[in-house]
Amino acid sequence: MAVARPLPVYATDQELYDALARRDDRAYAFLYTDTFPLFQNWMLRNSGTEMDAEDAFHKGMISLMQNLETGKYTLQPGTRIRSVLFEYAKCVWISELRSSRVRTRSPMTDEIDIQSVDDVSRDLERFELVQMVRNSLQQLKDDCRKLIEWFYVEELSLREIAQKMGLKESSVKSKRYACAEKLKAIYQQAEKQSGV
Image 1 (cartoon, rainbow, N blue to C red):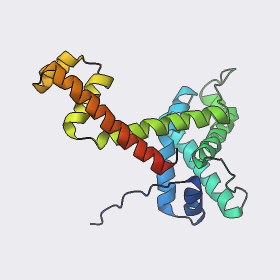
Image 2 (tube, rainbow, N blue to C red; image 1 turned 45 degrees about the vertical axis):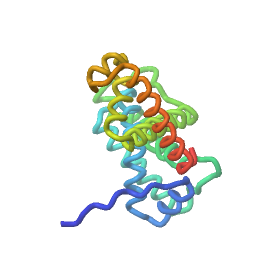
Image 3 (cartoon, helix red, strand yellow; image 1 turned 30 degrees about the horizontal axis):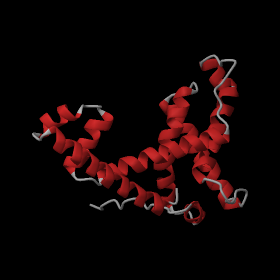
């Protein structure tokens, strides 16, 4: 039984573009994994279903692939490939909404929440930031990760955390600070490596 290799991480959009241009399946898998969740959320807010999202996203991915191969799309400085793919898939969905096939299935509203490319880029950047924080959090030791999650996510008080951990409240306060500093250092290192 073959063991699946982890997907590569691309430090720059140029590296990702080059891998896509070489038709590297792992680059397309990376792009799908990295961009589809955000697109699916957008779809669900814009009259789509999960199945519609998959369909539109795959068609957008195919359009991107064809345009790469024919030279219709080349990477421009400062362009995020994730944003480009998102726009391709979004155009597919907007075309579907305007088609009679979708109109007969469900009435089209007068206004559709269509975000600009800048809004999409901001959403992607926020999504990437959240992913980087989650990845950084996973690199902390178990006790630090739990403490950070309890304090910042579940919003437990230092006293409640001290009871859970069997420590004094003052010790938890010091530990929270130390853990937050470790998380910050891990995040900053990841940020440098990703070039964000």
